Length: 328
Ligand code: ADP
Ligand code: MG
Image 1 (cartoon, rainbow, N blue to C red):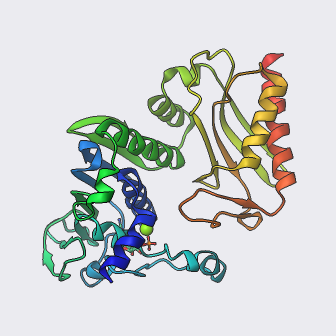
Image 2: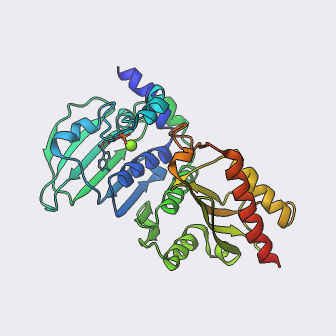
Image 3: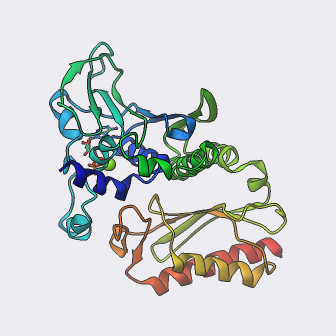
């Protein structure tokens, strides 16, 4: 079982950024209003995610580290979609099988209460001991891949690994304006983002995550038609130093990479603007959940629209119109 765990772990735990992604997703699922991410040495030495969410009760704490431990109710459809991939309820188990993991939590408002459980590469007696913690959860992951040297060797430089972490953080912070976020690396605070869902707070966050120049050369749009809403920012060609990788597309709050979406945006951009410019954008598509299947693959940001043609045409015409008007 130990080997099986470690093999399965590879599916979820590729590098520090994948650990951050999973831990932050759990923090979001727990209804947190504040999430703090802290790393040392690109995450190879330490990854810590603290939240102020619902917390995990004493008796559930060791369970949270075991396989298929999900407390999340899945629809039959979701189960059918992901059961064969076996990713649900596996993240914490997988991470703990390739690291030294500490999980502390408190479900009450009393900060003198709280419990902790420690695991080390799967060699753990799930012993729970009292440990004061404010309401919410902290997960600390030390020495990632300490027991899988081959995998550890695949880790790149500290700078590269942290770059991936920052990108994962950026996506998650862009997906939830109503949550306050902090990102720290080697005791330095790199992002401190206040929660706020009004347009001022949103633009402040965009600037802070993507740089001031992004917004200075971007068009804000908000278009609704036939049950679809597209809002966000799209870069104008006046931004000569736009970074080609600043492309963020969210469907109902989930980051998505999709060929149909990319194609619609590229077409609109090419039709209206200059050739040879990479489109840059932070766009949010809101659709009725019944017309989209986001669970095609839980780790790969894929999406399947019931009516792809309709979504494509809506994206294309919305962007085409907005960009065209901005040129006129
Ligand atoms: P999944 O998220 O798919 O359920 P995980 O292995 O990521 O599986 O987490 C296992 C369980 O541990 C979750 O279902 C949840 O009950 C609990 N859990 C993990 N992280 C947190 C957290 N930050 N706050 C509250 N509960 C958590
Ligand atoms: Mg999870």
